[in-house]
Image 1 (spheres, rainbow, N blue to C red):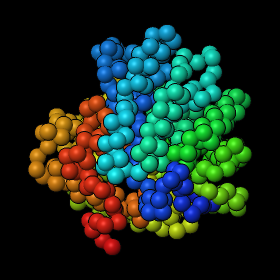
Image 2: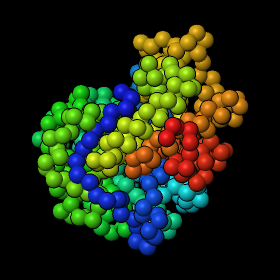
Image 3: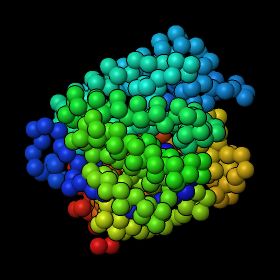
Image 4: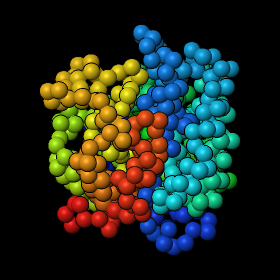
Length: 416
């Protein structure tokens, strides 16, 4: 998830009629909106999703182990490989995919780092992800689900977030080898798509930060990415993140005649001070307003909300970075509590939620999926977590917070 501004939407690139559906999918499945989840925390580690992997450093002052790069650097390749092989084989099980299918999820977005696809031997990262990915793709076909392969981490980090693999400075595109290696990774994804009919789209890169990489550089990369993927897998749709830029910034791409494209925007309610202070009704109103914006952009370029959650606090442990606190209770350095006495205690423990909190969460879930289905659909972050319940789709849906099936178009939380 991003750690910057709330809604940044861009009217991007050209457009296909729809995401293709897997072989054998019926017309209804092809025509329905994307209703998806992210398989985050699998091939790109995030301490807040799977804190058990990072727990041994939880109380080590100034530890460098804040992301996957440093996780492997400190453990060494042999031990890192051993631990991650166990993780890759356990975090996503066939039962998870079967459950998601039962919950009427139709799309999986799978984040991967470049190091799984086009590794640099001098990096501390380890490989071995692809057989586990192919197993998931086979399950997706079995349960008739569509897959978006998402390049979530680029060489040098495209945004400085831990979810890029390397937290800190934004160095992507700064070295001559960065873009060619990124394109090599996308070429690998395109070849995987050719062998797996469940793969219907490839995301060029997740959340490139316009404050660290210029719009011109991102634009040029998107054109190269499109050409690279299409030259190998012409049938797939290309997904472009908006880079947190407004629509006017993307108009120059339209004459490039890029087709078979989808715009991806990510919407969160807890990373910006004014939004995290919203009351319940204001969160609902914001979701509905975001839906109107998506609807307007979707008329010229198919637009999805590729990441969102039900969190209205940033209380998930380490959400803001390993060993970092929260804005909500003022434990994040430089922050003040959102209100006197604001506490993170049990904010992410569904079993402790009050009836009012549960009712709000249900309404918030319905407002968001109704809003985002005014576009081409939505993909919730995340399919599950170890302890952050407002980010755990399976747990939320099993407990009636999300409706099953999650048909946003049938809901009436937002004004029509």
